[in-house]
Length: 445
Image 1 (cartoon, helix red, strand yellow):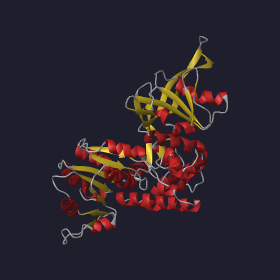
Image 2 (cartoon, one colour):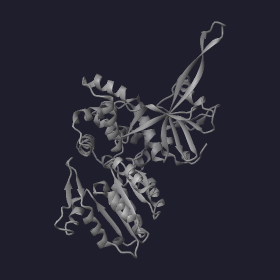
Image 3 (spheres, one colour):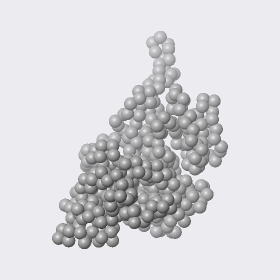
Image 4 (cartoon, one colour):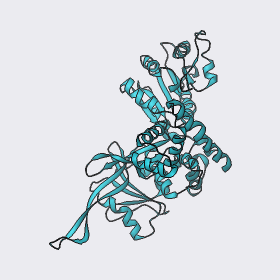
């Protein structure tokens, strides 16, 4: 079985030789290295690039790091940092690259976990001056990569964010029908290695260990965190709150309620940022549709992989409604859209009367689950696991009816029916059609 990751491969191919550093980001075990070092590498070989002109180096591989020992033997290859992580000697690495390149041929540099190279910004900046170098890097920390490179290279970097397997990739790679795939996908998520495991016991054990031994340890080590238990408990708390509007004060109060410990809202905010920087979670901001502006608080928290989320809760809270919303959010990002939470202020007539006998109007804020944008395209989306009555359908569509622009308004529901459009233009789409049918994404309105 093989996962093709064609969507991401096409994004990389579209950026080939564009004079920018291609920055491939994503959580650990999402498949970044496989995408770059196998799928993209195979593409280059098939188009005739000599293997000697494709230089692969993984800064978290001892085997690759050993290749540097011969350069400047009096200097350390690895330098241990205060937080017990390490950085690779950049001078040794540059000598390694110099030995394998020249100024006349074209070379592809495929550099894995580049944040482990000391002063990686300076080294990459120097390589940008080599017109015959096409540079691709991966990394597992957004603060290390995205923000630093954007600042350092002033628009000379382009990011491709890789999520764990989307539902379509999961079905195709495992050869499963949607109904069968959904049962396991909403429990164990889309980490490629987990998807290929044979037993539930192995999947559970791996995901729990991934959370504890990789994600949390990386965050603790990189940020020098002393309140390690509090970070772990914050991770657990966020796992139980996917799709719920939250702010730092609410999170702090919830933390006290659950753990019986006090923690400041600023510390909670910092922990959330650490988890977001490591691509464990993502924050969806709220956008006022009529006011056309972002609202600072609250936000919604979604997980990059639903299996990781479930593992933090010991697989006790498999609520299909909230998990479906999280999966739709990730699907939008997989398709290249940015996704915000929508809010629309409305004035509704009540049964109450004023002194003149006229109906009093009440101001309300209605929510739209997602506003998805990609260039000139925009979609308004509601996630509803089921709409088994007219009242439920009216409730789910209500906020969409108040939006007066011409962009497509969609309710995604798990009903197994064909796409339908009501008299007000709101489209109802079956969940599996939404996740699997490419044609639905090719029209703007």
